[in-house]
Image (cartoon, rainbow, N blue to C red; front, side, top):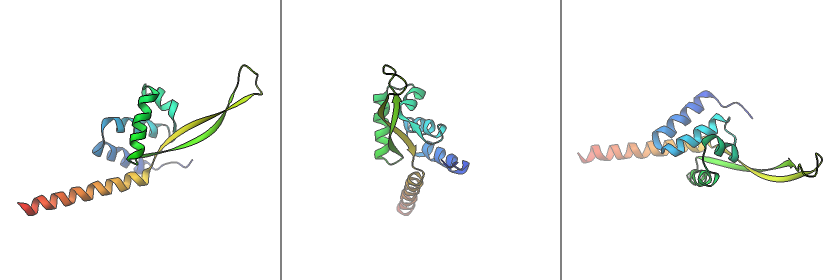
Amino acid sequence: MAEIPKVVLDFTRMAMRAFYSDMFIVVVDAILNERNYAKEDVLAERLRFPLKDLRIHLDHMKRVRLIRYERRVQRRVVRRKGPGWFRRVQSTFWFVDFPSILDMTKYRLHHMRISIQHTIQTE
C-alpha cells in the first residue's frame, strides 16, 4: 500500500474533530494509526469495545460515507488436524475514504457560507 501524505492525514483528523462526534474521531484515529487499513477484530481489541458495539458505529460511519470496508477470505490453520489443514475465514478490513471526507468538508463549508450570508442579509 502507498504511503499516505502527512497533509492528507492532518486534514482528515482536523475535519473529523471539527464536524463529527467523539466516537467517530476515536474510530477514525484508530484506523489511521493502523496505516489506514484495520481489521475489525484488531480495532475492537485496540479500542477495548465489544465487537457488536463497534460494528454499530462502523456501520453508521459507513452510511455517512466516512469509511469503507473490504471483505477478504483468509486461511487459518486448524490445529486439531495438523499443520497442513486450513479453514477459510472471512475477515472485514476498514479504511478511511479520503475523497469522501474532502467532499463532505466542502459541502459543510458551503452550507456554512450560505447560512452566514443569509444571516448577514436578514440583519
